[in-house]
Amino acid sequence: MSRLVVVSNRVSMPTERGARAGGLAVALAEAMTPGSLWFGWSGKRGATASDQAAVTTHGGLTYATLDLSESDYRRFYVGFSNGSLWPLLHYRTGLLDFKRDDYEGYLAVNDLFADRLVPLLRPDDTIWIHDYQLLTMADALRRRGVKNRIGFFLHIPFVPPAVLHVLPSAAVLVRALAAADLVGFQTHGDRMNFLESVASCMDVRPDANHGFTHNGHRTETIVAPIGIDADGFARTARRAAGMAETKRLIESLVGRALAIGVDRLDYTKGLPQRFDAFGQLLHRHPEHLRRISLLQIAARSREDVDRYQSLRRELDRKAGDINGAYSDFDWTPLRYMTRTVNRNTIAGFYRLARIALVTPLRDGMNLVAKEFIAAQNANDPGVLVLSRFAGAAEELTEALIVNPYDADAVADAMHAALVMPLEERVARHAALLTKVQRTTAASFCRDFLARLKAIEINA
Ligand code: ADP
Ligand code: F6P
Image (cartoon, rainbow, N blue to C red; front, top):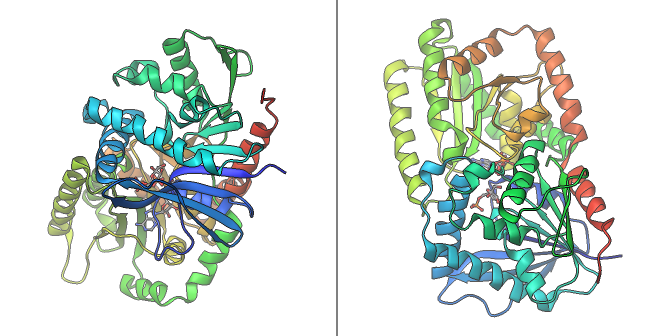
């Protein structure tokens, strides 16, 4: 049987302490099967990059990681990946901070990943590369003579050609992606945007099966939404009822309703807009004054990128404004924390919440939405308020779907959630749970890999 080699910028080592925030690491950790190899960045920076990957085994999995140099980190990770690609692919062209030198650093690190992976490869390995940090790695492997099956999955959105071409090097990236045998997306819209970009950058039209052939190489595409281990997460949430943190949270609420937000502290997550919407709820629906608290857990992320630092300052100020305007001596409406919280604890918090606010301005999928649904008590569930711009909204249509740019509409949805009859909450939750149980982390991997392995390659 062919071995699975997963490549991603972040590798979630089982020995790491504490929680890792981020959908990719969470989903892949749940889906790796024994015997697989997971290859990527160690998360460490040295004077120079590693000249070979450090290999360890744990629980039947092999991990191979490499350090990056400080300059690689600045140009590849801070610069091009998170200063150009991240805003671009989330439709935020105004935030693009393109520098030619960063772009060259990005290509060099993709080449470095390929150089360090090649010695570890076996001829029948199936290679699965993940996410926007590694758009050119399949091509880098091909240039080194790798003939294995290569799949690529993009965890974040893909934009239409008119947006894509804002990035000077867009056509190079699209052509490099076509070196994979299978390219996967979270939603149908993302795949359509990619195929339109292929037509625009490579002058190649897709066929009826959403694949295309260029210079004798065929690239297929697939829509494979990522999910979670819903049943496992539900068990974690039920068990969390007995945890000290859960009890402390219940005590602190003194019977008030809990609204919850759990996100990386990222400008795509719509946090300032969410705070504004919460302020609007208190302003426009004063019956909820003193009756609700919003707990926003925002894990600090990418702190070396300027825009993330300014976002943090903006949120500090907004949180202060809301609490200054509405707090009472024994009630703080907004509880705002900027750190990661243990996954088990979060599961228990979701289960206590009457509302989850998942209101990104743009998101590839959003696993928090799925975790919240899985964690609920089916007999008395909370209500999901979900942005129409999250990939999850394509499937989770029984949530209260909102436009996160419209603070009044989000406030009204929160109000609707707070007054929603039990019967309606139960019906919406049951429909959502069925979907979250159907599209799991395991089914995501199974569907993608089945399709990849079915592709004929000319080795
Ligand atoms: P992204 O991949 O953009 O970070 P997702 O919603 O898809 O967004 O995935 C986020 C994952 O990280 C979820 O599993 C969520 O529980 C976890 N997470 C997010 N914020 C925190 C936090 N503050 N503490 C711990 N885990 C977090
Ligand atoms: O898909 C979103 C993503 O970039 C993942 O690749 C990553 O695990 C997560 O966000 C966290 O970001 P970072 O790896 O930059 O800390």
